[in-house]
Length: 296
Image (tube, rainbow, N blue to C red; front, side, top):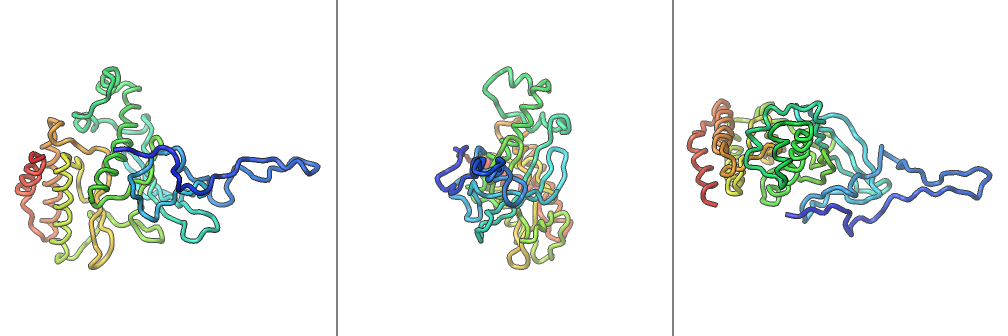
């Protein structure tokens, strides 16, 4: 898998360099660093970019501006903000995105890292030791690994057709991705907060089952799948699930605890559907998922 770490040929406008007007009595900065609208210029250039073909709504123009519209969600490892990116005076070049910002090593909890990180490898033994002993350097490596892993995982599973947000870009420990919600910036509810009609549950479960099977065929388990990490997007006949929060993705075979994580995902989601009126045999679901993972 490859990512475009610099701007592409579809970047049509670059923010102007500062020039000082010296034709007047006093020097005047006629092209200031600050953009004419918003808070800052687009952060697209220099970031790692999501997979191609990109959705049409992705704004790649370097002349675009951005504005942080506030917090959508807070968590132990990261906060998610709503960000608007648009091109001034260009109709239709305007999009809302979710910005996931991982906490610094001083403000994140690392007690859950060990089980998830088994089976992942870095090239240098010194880095592996630092991560294992949780030195300051090791925690910094883990922090970067969470962000990079989620971005690369999203890119892979999005390309495989799973119902996940499109990953727009990654800059250090901030990931911009597709905003799942309406045009007014109201986010889709988590499944735990939603109350879908009972008659819709079989359709939603089949969506979930297909997504989990596709993921298992790739050799992965989500690792923390729950009604809090699944969004219910759309309404009526357009209602569909979107799976979020992927930094802890687990290699089912490479991680010695992989089957345990997979079984927990199946049990947690099966129990939710059963409690809400659609009975699911999570043991059978787990068996189907393990068979898919072992058939690779």
